[in-house]
Length: 190
Length: 252
Image 1 (spheres, each protein chain N blue to C red):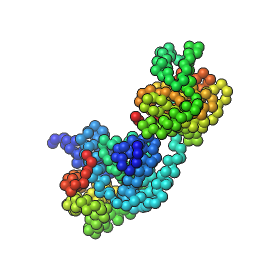
Image 2: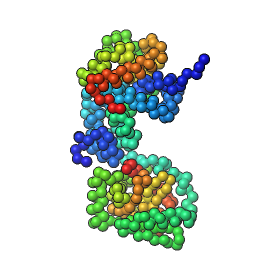
Image 3: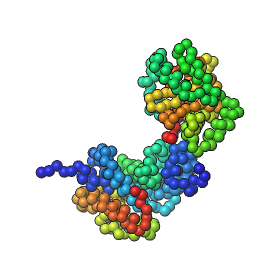
């Protein structure tokens, strides 16, 4: 293998499976910023977010076969790992949780904040376009669940909506985004 | 009143699940369903890909974070001895059954490379001796270690203090590097290398009491881990002691 800069994520994962530290370093270069950004966004704690990044990349090193390139992108795998860990941490810390809920309720009452936060995190213009095309109630439910780390039941309480409505909105919003991203030419891995 | 379609109920949850927004029993039931339902687990994966786009931050990870991860990589990781090497299976060393000896003889016949010698001693032990360090072996081992197609395994002791490297080429040629990390054994004992393939421990050679660089041969992709035990001088048909070091091999 020559320069790792040019290889696919799948080939990178294979090289990591062969204990190639330079391959892990390249995966870190490509994806650690996004993993850190998400963990930081969910936990609102830089040190805790760094720990999550470490855990996620060490796990990739120690158990590379958990990632299946046939199933999806390396980035979505790493982000899903980081999100799950961040959310577990959030939910295991009840006092923190109460504070988060207060913050979340505050932000939902402000309204436009939610939109701004999502848009800040979606830098590329076409991504903004797809996100802005979402109905506000879908966008809000996704934001509270994904970036707020709330369960859909909690989101329902925050938005004073029936639980069934909230879970449907999250699903329909994600489907709409998928179509929107495809329309604006962003490849969404099958 | 009709029973609601469980599949449809689960489907409604897939978006929330992909965002880790389902918990408790509901999550456990959904995960049971996902194990059996390819369509639903595909949909979860699609939602996760979309979420990955949302998470795009454009920023970098904090300075110094990679350095800390790289440092952690160098810390020895304890191999999972219980998984690789269940204790129950070797708590009663017994005389090898004739069928086992026959099987060992087949393995032995299949090897026959790199200076392996095969002995049948007292009808008990098929003893293999791996090729020990010679300039040719060292050169071959160094070349193998640099081959990206080779499978590389770090064999480590449970406390991580002893570490050596195993390299297995596609053609079955294998090498142990830094075998000098193994403490010297008393006279009359030898290190023995094992390939672990499912429930089988296949002897890959006797290494002597004080090995340095070793060549061995292990055929087939079925070997998922390497282990080294200390055995009495003539070696053993099956390991009789807890391995000094073990290491997983990455899949082919």
